[in-house]
Amino acid sequence: MSRPQPLKEEAYDMSGARLALTLCVTKAREGSEVDMEALDRMFQYLGFEGTTKKDPTAQEFQEEMEKFQQAIDAREDPVSCAFVVLMAHGDEGLLEGEDGQMVRLDDLFQALNNKNCQALRAKPKVYIVQACRGEHRDSGERLGGSDVMTVTTDNPQTIPTYTDTLHVYATVEGFLAYRHDQKGSDFIQTLTDVFMNRKGSILELLTEVTRRMAKTEVIQEGKARKVNPEIQSTLRKPLYLQ
Image (cartoon, rainbow, N blue to C red; front, side, top):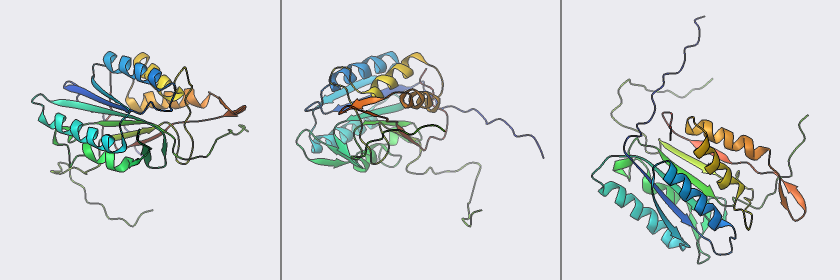
């Protein structure tokens, strides 16, 4: 048996513009302003052109995503990457706008996919979602062949609609996300610290975020809770931010 070969390293080209959009509901979400400040510092440090909108309604969430897509496609200079940060109350697959109405996350994600945003076709799109995904609470645990035919080609002329996308959720499906009234959320604060002060591919950085959060306990209603992010990736290459 031959020796396993190292993976070929072909990272995303990050020489073009880096764009970021932050949509944050602050109403009844004490500490969210601290998270916004941390994100602003991170995006500035990493060379992103950032846009922020506070307290969008459910409809404005959708409208702001569409405006972001249109602005990206209208640029004359090349775009390398886009970050979208969504912060609000939520439930599984849903975000709550400032008006109390819900918007589907999947509808928001459609705006920048390879079909709808030409300038970001085959470019990385990163979504960071700080929101609850259900009502479950995690108290932690003590440590103690395929029939599908695949057609391949070395030089494909098309690309799947949903590749080159990274979804990073503050918590796993069905569970609560937490936020401190003065310090902000452990998720956003840990993520911005790691992204600014560590080097590696974005998936390596997110593994470090998960490691740190797994060591953290959140006290809620006098009880210790655990929380960890969930990462869903269709990236085709390593993504390096610095």
